[in-house]
Length: 207
Image (cartoon, rainbow, N blue to C red; front, side):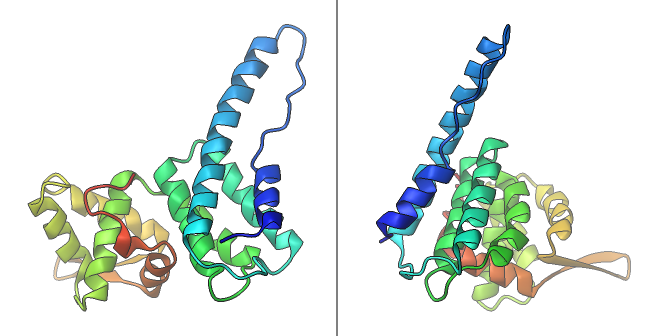
């Protein structure tokens, strides 16, 4: 459950302010406001849904400044067009982080840009690699790629390109051994996987 104060703060930050119309540009302002309103409404619903689904501390965040910074950054991702699947992962990170201790803005802001940037296919591969790592697999990225390609979730050889792209996130290490590329897991993969509840993500759906 979430308190009324938290819900009110979310509603305030994730509600678009009226845009002042400029002569000759009223239509553009109207379109912009409509799009921003839709995106923020969806983001607000996702965040409240996730917080209500989990257990959060009465002291939701470390301070008012942290609360505004976290929710504003989440809202910025929404207004800039982040997909709903990415917003849900960001909301899950907020939910998981606040279950045991107050959340500091620095914690969330460190991971938000990376989560925001992930494509649907990258999320699927990362979630599967995390599940494989939890199961004790020593080569989770290769095993995840093989599993998703076998099930037809990813096209043959697509996972190689995706894993290379994910090196940018810090969740994958890349080593070249005897002209072969070896991908390794990192502590960051386990951190993100735990915070974003990736093990619960359906293997065929990142929506």
